[in-house]
Length: 101
Image 1 (cartoon, helix red, strand yellow):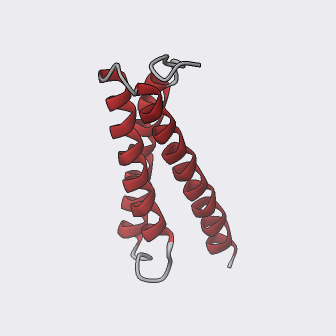
Image 2 (tube, helix red, strand yellow; image 1 turned 60 degrees about the vertical axis):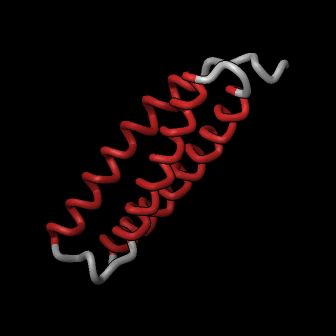
């Protein structure tokens, strides 16, 4: 595959990461509103996920706008999207254990 050839995932990464930013803000708002922000790490994980998804959104948009080297930006965006999803999984497990105990 040539370096300039796009795989077409950039637009999907852009939409997914932008939606997940909103989801993380909702979780962050609920944690802060419930008063449990000081008792758990879930809000810090959510804030970190917001930053990771913002980076994925930026690189995905750059991949859509730039013609030369766009595959490299798309791959970087994909890595950050996967990293953000891993953070969401960690947050979900932490939230489940927080609700159990």
